[in-house]
Structures are given as structure tokens and as C-alpha cells.
Image (cartoon, rainbow, N blue to C red):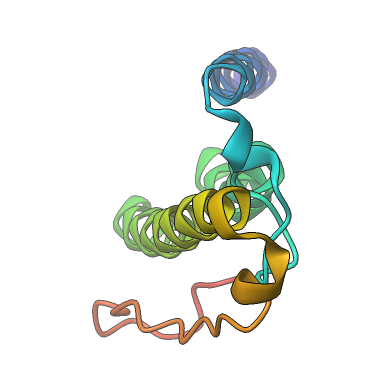
Length: 122
């Protein structure tokens, strides 16, 4: 039964990645610009988010992590990725309008709240 469940987990993960690729394809050209974050908004969506979520979700599915703990970790990783994504979008738009020189001086402070839970970022 466990193997069958893992098969469904793999299917769901592939569907999730498909939706991310579809979403990235519909993003404007400015989201492909690598900014001061040393990444682009599309890279964050296609690589950063899955890299942050996969180990958390896999550990929950495999029974190695409690559901509530997994939920907090997913929530935290998602908030951090969304803040990075928003920053990358703004920096990409700025770079497209004003050039990379202005955007290269940007500083990311990473001030996302951690919901009182530590060490959930990867």
C-alpha cells in the first residue's frame, strides 16, 4: 500500500511541476532577467520553489515528519519564496526599464517572518 501511495505522490509532484512550467511560460519577459538576487523570477518559480518544497513534502509523505510540522515548514518556505519572487519581479522590471546598473545596487534584506519556527529554510 505504501508503494501505491508513493506512486500517487510522484504523480502529484509531476502535475505540480507542470503547472509551474505553464505559469512561468505566461510570465512577462522581465521575469527572465537575472537581477541582484543572482537569479530571475522564473528561476525562482521553476527551481527555487520546488527545491524548497520537495524535501518537506517528501518527508511528510514518507511519514518521517508530522503533518502539522510539515504544514508550518511548507508555509514558511512558500512565504520566503514568494517574497523573493516578488523582489525578483520588481528588480527584473526595473532592469528592463532602467538597465542593470541601477538594479545591481539593490540589497535584499530577507525580512520575512518565521512564524516562531526556526530552521525550516533549506
